[in-house]
Length: 140
Image (tube, rainbow, N blue to C red; front, side, top):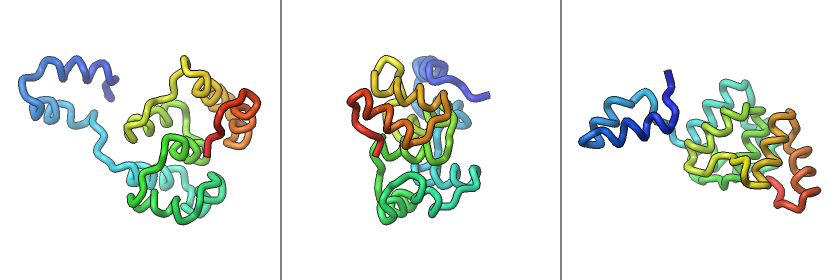
């Protein structure tokens, strides 16, 4: 069973040495680099890198650099990839956590629009239209 972050924090508070935590919680820790995580998602979703490039609107060279691990994408580029892969809200939150970027947070207006779009199965284009209508930066 995967532990929630708060549960992991509680365990971490109670250990004497960091290696005790790492050893005990090994199955609950992220072990992949971002590019490996994204490649794994592509494989599991049956989407080629070409389809990712076409549907995300990301630059071809830049996308290949992300997939090879040569470039670290911004949070918005990660979100564009998430929309293209049609990830669930939980999958997106997990990917954002793995990147070290903040998860989508309903108290942040722009994030709340993105969450709404995800919950209503909106495309990246539809989501960007909503963001534009509310005066927020587009996901690019």
